[in-house]
Image 1 (cartoon, rainbow over the protein chains, first blue to last red):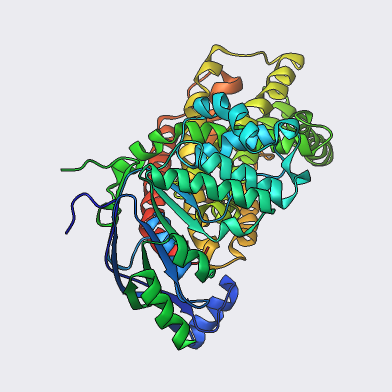
Image 2: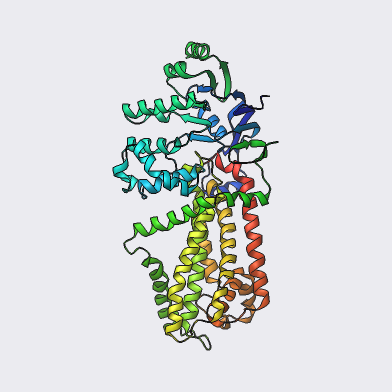
Length: 245
Length: 277
């Protein structure tokens, strides 16, 4: 066990129960209960997954849809508690699982910067001071007083990315978010990520873009139906993955 | 040995005892304040009447109920203008109903945040209850104005109104968390809650005097905890008197018990709820 690793995932599983006939309403549930027809289906999203991410490492997760990649990210992001096993995360985390998940369309750009930053665990007073600098980076200075329901998706992505990366995190979680936005945004955001990696930020990212994975990842985990298929050198894992599809 | 902080997460330490549940909340008070103001500003921005709606809404209900029960049924409260009795009941019961529904729907409504960013989920339920409490405080203004206009005046005990206010806040937060847990599993729970609150409102002497309740049904009134909350509140806001001691016992006892049960049940069931969001 590495005591200094930013992320340790030990034998993690996630299972949950779904009611079989997906009752949905309490009335139906009560009726089914009386009839004795309540059945549960046990779904296993992840099974016995282990890995460690060291400082400055770029760890990628690949696999087909429904493999549990996003679920794994949410566990590291502290959103989903594991059913069994253990997750340890040391350091500040910038989760970019869905940029701007806390945005409110009725509020202005400025108000949303403060709200989203606070949801990410920062002090509202600090966010108020930082709002202008964030808007400059996101190239949204002229739109700061406009409710963000009138923003384009590219503008929202820029704003979300700018808030999430305003302070350099020790751990960055990226879930395909950088696929949105125009080319110039993709370029600047990639540049910013590379800067952070160079300064020692650890990254966990999920991607279907195998070329990028091979280019920037230092290690790769291949998940399939919640089970670890392979873990190791990106080129080896990608070759095996490609051969299987 | 590591201490639990925002920058250290160990899933094995996630099942925290109740006391740290509250200290965790204190750490997020900045977010709590922000969510309450967001709740209020979004609501006021959306409606053309803005904040006036909070003042007009109880007055509108009061006017209709005053015509029906004050004029048609001719309900009378000895030594007190009926409007004051009526409006004081309406503002407290509106607070109760709004807060339970708002806190109950807060988790489902915030699912896009809660399924992507780590935030103590209770913060959303508490902020919804606090926003309803802020509306309650605003709606006290027309009540106090009417008390002056009809000659009842404002007794000194009005400074003690925060006591029933805090008790109601704890009650609605606890109930809201229970409703919120159930609402993740079954989407009709919120509608049923609305119906249940309506029925409970009829069983609380909001618009009728307790004196018209037949002897054999009085237990039904006294068994309803909301009766105690309302009696304490009315004592402070216009009577200038302390309600009977047992109503304080019921009020404080139920508020603390319901809050603790709500927080406990919610935090215990959270791991089963979050996967469904």
